[in-house]
Image (cartoon, rainbow, N blue to C red):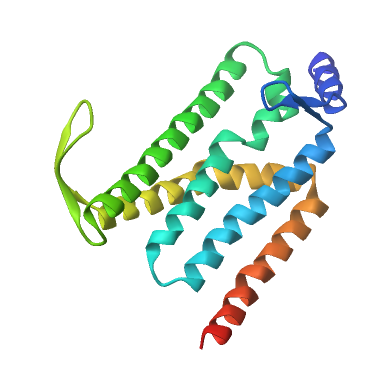
Length: 198
């Protein structure tokens, strides 16, 4: 137990290296940035959804939300993960690799939605869509749009909320202030824009 605690303490004071080993950040700075990203992507989705009636624009915020949760998850840089060994290390890495695949799927859904929209038009679909191992007889943009939302909803429970709990533990003040700021923007900015438009 003392050895594990000592290993974790070593990583708590050790900066992290990210962005292909080109950027070195102190842990406090990293978690502050993550708090901003967490708040901006979460409340950004709800802000856009409340401003714009057409759901097509939500695909942008859903993509940003899923990518932030799955590809730059703050728990990857946790002291537990960096100090973990053997079985625990494999389990944690499997969790993050799963997130990478989820992010790729979300990118594919985003690309498919806009391909259908730009090629066939709004409200239209495509017949005989090949997916490598299978083929879908017919798919329209609205169905793809719902798939995007459902995947973002799934990610919120599997990746986002565990990550926010960890961020609140590591950087409670930046996390709280970031979410307060973007929550206020998500509520009052749509109201202001709506009033101006009317």
